[in-house]
Length: 181
Image (cartoon, rainbow, N blue to C red; front, side, top):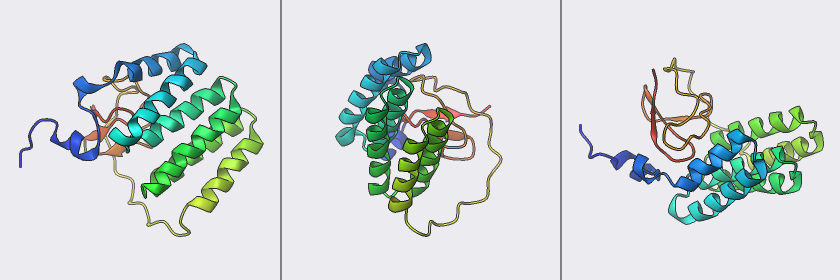
């Protein structure tokens, strides 16, 4: 069955390739350049704007704002953004994503020696996740994805990405389709 061009992205709450905000590209460039304070501010502004227009993207943007703030040394603000992103994922019923991204945040905090903050996120996950999550399906061999989204420049984490079909994934940040090699 054929779909009209872009129908999938709009149905799932994503943006088409031509609709990627320059601010998102800029935020990802700031992260690569090591300007974590600028990236945190930009990601947070994007997340706030996405809350109503692209609610599936907002938690991911808050998580990235939190990550950037922590990397920039503003741990208190970073933890608040991480918690907000995780809370939004829970309210959307996206518990598997919440667990994956929460675990990544915990690992990154521990790697930076922020053990108390890592424990705070772990406690938050423990209190927020349902006792029993449905079992995840067995891992499927997938094609290799690019390391960064060609549309927005966001980092692609193959273990955390949402797949549209067997060869196409969706960028967490902008919703653009990512094709494997």
